Length: 499
Image (spheres, rainbow, N blue to C red):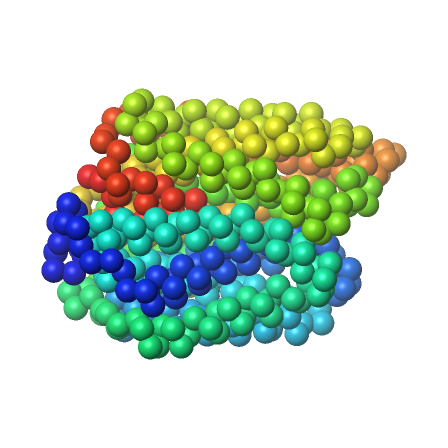
């Protein structure tokens, strides 16, 4: 599908994005990404206030990603059929409602439920916001708009933990959600007044709701089994039943996708080796960075280890975010010089090194010992994001770029959900085991973090090998669109690029 009005060619100067479109989409994506990155910093405060264990509150993170994975493609399809502005406004409304629900919650159940709703809202805002930008611009104007959007996303991700820490200390953890709700609410009149409605008249009006439900049915029991397996027993009826349900749902999903007119996942594209390799790279990259940020946010604040305040913990995560963002402008030129596969492999190698350093964590480590591993890991994954996103869409025909982008974006959410659940389980299981064996609190927590980082190191190593085997090394001209797509790639695969 060509999202450019009038079929404008990539070299056209093209119109600049209307100011209202830029404001509504960039501000909303900034808020969504800030909210997402801040939540792990807030969890200890939420736990203390609501009396809910951190193990349970992990679902505030994984539930968000689970629902986002299920609806990211569907929300874009709804926008194409019923109006992108209309569905974007619906996403803003859901986001506001979820913030209010979370802020007013007196228990963990309300926070988790609100975060699940927020997952649907965030995915809708990102998917339809990008579509609104694409249809309102072309050529150089589209490049500028996408770059602004990607920059807003990066700023939100970087600022989230810091802002969350400031607000916990100043207003309580609820303050973040009240402020986010107010900013999202301010985007509504801007959208109503200045953003034109658009649809895709050539798209089938069929919406794959069955596929959406089945994706959630695959992920929910699988993640539940991963989260509770150590408590229930990995061979217990409950765990085996969860995995069986996920397997049956996966089989049903494949059967449905083969028959529906407009499938959530076009199974035909899964024959593309490069797309599959790039998508696995995106899944692993998103999973590792989200899993790590969840782990260190809690570890830094634990009284037995670094005992940082929420504000200090937010500041402590900045080196990772800065490393991720700093390498982004370098990616297109690096791909031009050595090829996509080499850059992805180098990125995963650096991330593997960062994870391996953290495997040696000890209970008496101070913050300074974490800086180099965090920067190495985040910068490495920054090298992965752009090329993997580019490979996923450049490996298919022009008509399939949108579908390939949808697969990549779904993988991003799945990776975040699965890895957060997995590392939380490993961390808690090993920590509890070491504590029961008589280790002190700090040493037990360090052992849990070490084991979880070993899992992340293995994942990065797998990504390094797959990037060599599955993604063809290509050198390409680093055109303007490469920089715009790279700016957005840590959060969203943009369905445009130099081809």
